[in-house]
Amino acid sequence: MPLRDIDRNLLDRCVRKEPGAWNDFVDRYMGLIYHVIQHAAHARSRLVSAEDTEDIAAEIFLKIVDDDFAVLRRFKGVSSLPTYLTVIARRTAVKELIRRHREEELGHTNAHRAATEDGSPDDTEALASAEEVERMLEDLSPREAEVIRLYHLKYQNYRQISKRLGIPENTIGPILARARKRLREAAEQRSAG
Image (cartoon, rainbow, N blue to C red):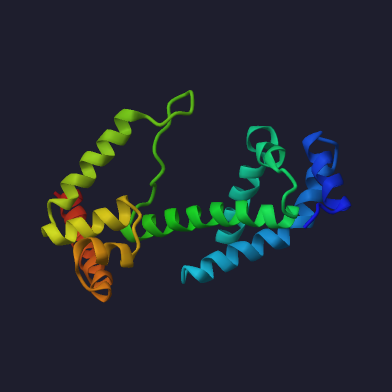
């Protein structure tokens, strides 16, 4: 589908940073972005509040403006601009939904890693986090620990875990639930002691 004149004009104005261009862009595509977020959440069986939707939309718009509108500069016009933005929005929304879901499941209040002044991840912090996760997994049976590793650290879905470990797919949810409960109890005991 060829690029429509209205989209080409809006794209050019944003890249040139014309006054009011970004506001026009947001006005034009906000509905699309919100729709993509809702669709991604529904596809993952996640309920998102209005506040979560706004936060995820903000992440998507930040992705678009990041690095001097790099996302818009990479647009080649092979598809329509709304189709291109849908792909960008969906990828960003799914990553954000996964991140939020994992934080919620593990009971984290702050899962953001510290960053050094130049913005790169702090290797010491990452190593400490990995060691902490491994210590926590020692509280679990080997099977539970492996399911947790595959789901939360390797981002595999139930079907992939089932094939890899040779266990029925419908047992993975209960295994994860029991393991999370044990991890929470162990964390509470550590913090109390």
